[in-house]
Length: 212
Ligand SMILES: [Zn+2]
Image (cartoon, rainbow, N blue to C red; front, side, top):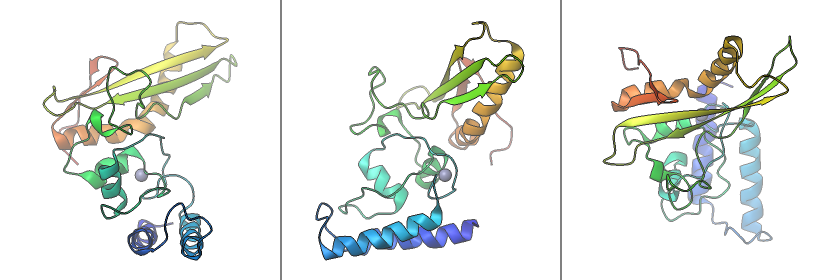
């Protein structure tokens, strides 16, 4: 599906959300059934993944007012079931506003709260070494600076090994980082666009010269 086709369907979804008289919760009501049918038809066309780019999405909660902006639903209208949006598209659609750690989680995320939703923790990436059969799982979390904090985005990675040595060989790191970069390459552009530094596992990353 082309981006233009996606944009047309997304505009229809926005219109449906902003105009449907359906009352969410009234699951037997005629208006709700009409809304649900139209919604399912549109989302079926888009397929799984991010509404806007079709890419892989993480699961996290975004502050309600920001979620309304991301999916183009007017304030005051209910915004449940409006699909999933990847972090790269969230950042794009909120631009020039920066993302803050406090944007995530139902009430905003507290960095000290280990149970809070950390964007980027899902999905766990995995790789099986074809030579040894060892399985590796790989996760990452992205921390955004809150307003007034040091302008640094921090990505922390975590690795689990099943059946293999605890010390990871370079070839394993290469595999895992290749996968990681597929998920976070947008963060580099994001940091450049907002004048932020990027640290991965405590190491500052060199960002390209030209902002895209
Ligand atoms: Zn996306």
